[in-house]
Image (tube, rainbow, N blue to C red; front, side, top):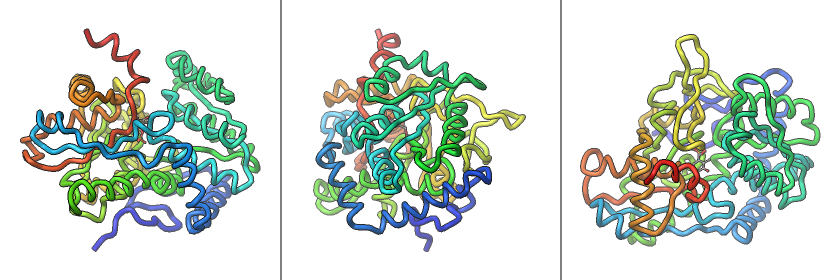
Length: 389
Ligand SMILES: *Cc1c(COP(=O)(O)O)cnc(C)c1O
């Protein structure tokens, strides 16, 4: 029997996917990080500190909420894993606290990050402030202009935001600049990647820092469901970290795992295998092999690639992947707000939209479904205001 979501080994492969496709100059940095993570993750003291901070500072454990009115409307029993209640309003805090602790353990007191919509930049700046670290966030010039509020938040938290003027002046150019910085400053800097992406060991390490979501949810579901597991576990997928963290808690159960991508950025559904950001995975490309820009109402889901472990889970059949379009997402966003008094982020509204569409189709009436609510919707109000009347 295949075991899923374990240690990918020194080559960092998930089936055919993953690996470490980086210039020679970055190999020692990736090796050093892998060794440090392996050591730390075997050290009970590291776990104690990580979980302790997520408890006293991050607000964990986050609850599982029975969504009774939504369940009644849909005809399935819906449980929500409430990452919207974590500090900074999403699951991103789990990963950045983990990486900041690891950086400090490695003697590196400077964090480098890239950000597109700004959410990961804000999370990294938060962790840097908490630990008294320097923080530099690279952000495409176009994104800097689009995400004024997050740029202000990062600066308020003490981070330096460096606009990137090269290429399309968006996320993928910011990634290149962050990598360049890391190569030049690796002795005292750690590159903090925001999802289950990039060269080995990042996809594995970030999944492990996020598995607290799934591990908690599994216990909480068993309490609510008298010892059984949900029939379906659904999470949205940008890079794939909240989904990977959730799936890790349920991968050895009978639950069907479903990842939901934005229809305009669906790397698994419409992508092809290729190398991007140091890894082999599915990516959105044009006929000339150029990476195409993903389009979505939700900035957090518009990355043109997906974490390599999701590519493997899809290829092996252990998880299924679907999509939701902007219109469905806006409806689901309103539905949860009105039935449960919870305004979800647009990203997890994709998971809800998929559920709404598939109940009675691929998801039988009467099923029990856990949905990871990866974040709260306050950040999306300016986007939504113009679209709803
Ligand atoms: C960033 C973000 C995502 C997308 O990232 P993943 O790595 O796929 O989890 C999803 N939801 C929220 C609320 C986010 O902030």
